Image (cartoon, rainbow, N blue to C red):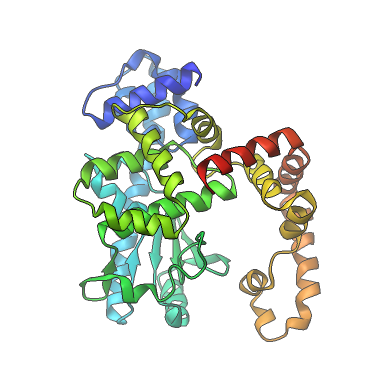
Amino acid sequence: MNQETQILLNALKSVLNGVDPEAESLPRIIGLAKKHSVLNLLAPTLLRCNDEKLRRRITAFYAEYLSQQESLKAAAEELFAELEKRNIPYMPLKGYYMKQLYPDPLMRSSCDLDVLFPPEHTKEVKKIMRDLGYTLFISNDHHMCHTRENVTVEMHYILSETPVPGYYDDIFARLRHIDGCLYGFTDEDFYIFHIVHIWHHFRAGGTGIRSVMDIYVFRTQKTDLDEAYLAREFDKLHLTVFEEKLRKLAFFWFGEGDGADTEELSEFIFRSGVYGTTQHAAVAGTAKMGKTKYFFTRVFPKTEDMKKAYPVLEKCILLLPFCYMARILTALFRRPQRLKSNAASLFGADSEKVQKMKKLFDDLGI
């Protein structure tokens, strides 16, 4: 762990425990905090610094952050009202509820609003989003992403990939009915989904400090969980070791826990940023399936994924080769920098990095 990372973790630990962090060293870690989407926790302290140029920079960041969080809150209220009108069951996910567990909801950043709804209501939901002024910019096998000004809304028809296929089948039958059309997880199932979601990002390229901080906040706020149930479900999902090591790391960073045997995991997370990196994704993909197979899965996604990106395939699957060609040409001419970055990451996935990643995954039981 380098000095900047230690400064950041100490500062976050102070804020979580209601103590002002040491302000003098904070300017050194602004970039790192922003990379992990936790700069908002340090902004109030930085706004009191003597450097006028730095104060202006942080003021601009924090004003934009507060505006975006307020926009997300208003968008959620507006969307939920429309879903209630049309009698469509729904469940807000992830950050929407996690924010409420922090000492101040503004301490937990959210870049978008995630909502689950039954897939049979997909056409109605698409119309609702259009009527509310959103633009659909991504549609795949598990969600639709919409944008409007500074708000992004992801409408999920299924929950994300899990270690055990089908674990979240018929999910609404397992949820708590809260009120009207609103449903929710039990505390135990909320925590399980959080760990599954981290696993999903972890395998796809990494996860950041904020995810580990969420574990610490949740486990310190929810002290009466059914541990026997959690143990059974994590065993079923093959995530027992993964959850134990992440929880151990969370209490080492932000509480008073022991950090023995967490060094490799720590370094992976420090390098990842909030949603992982293309370098980690390439190394992880190569570790799982080999470089050649990983390359072809990136260039030629599964037919199910292509159908979501190109709805015309639902009517005529014979157009699949042309859609693959369109996808390649789009990458070449409209996203050349992204293509260059992905290619560099793949070629940089040497055997030493791949073996190191395999060892980390093996140690975590994933």
